[in-house]
Image 1 (tube, helix red, strand yellow):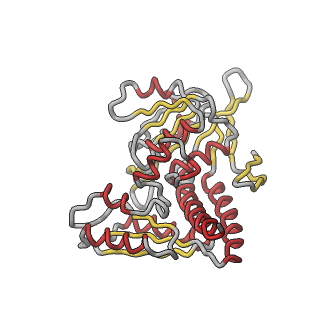
Image 2: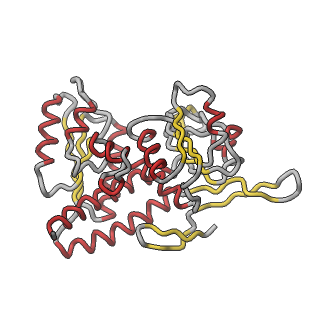
Length: 327
């Protein structure tokens, strides 16, 4: 399926959606799912950002991102590597600062304060989780990042602006922002739709609720204390899942034709894989694609978009600095 999609003013024709069909018992053919490619959408975003960065170079401003890591977790290293690769592709200057796992909270806060004062750095993210043998107050650390450089959108200032609907004056967390891009790609209007968000984390669920709400959806948030989640999901036109439970959402929960965005990344045992495990989402894909109208795969769905939106926020931060200097 070839679709036309506008991304930041750039309208292109790309095979972003892969269409699947199934023969019905009535002898006809009906759509059972359209797979939304996060990989291709992220590539489109990076291409657009590269053009914007190239234009900024005439003003001698190059977007700059610093990733602060505490410890040496293998999964964090992989995530950081993907961010550095994307930054290089876009033309963002990216630096990786790693503190040892013996670092104290005060050392981390001093490092953040130093970066906050460095005018050459436009974006600062603290890679979570903080892998230290010493006690760390994650809220204190994330809130220490200047709201003007908080391109992860996790500080209480940016979260507060988002919750109040001040979308043009904050940094939106990368995963929810990527989810919204994928929903837009389907051509389904969010306004007036019933949306269900499963999960209420500060990184995904809570900001996803706010984004959908301020884009005029009627939003229900389900969590570990919600009774009969399947009943709520069954009424939803749009479902975003960030529960952290492998293949939790089953196909028979879904309203037929809904938009289904899976933010989950889980590892389950699989003797057929060299590693002995495979990656699955929070949605049981095999049953869900027979009910959903649109669905994101795992991997290759939301994950690439999270990194792309981090690049977008970093470029936006540099553009805001450039605009303030012009004034």
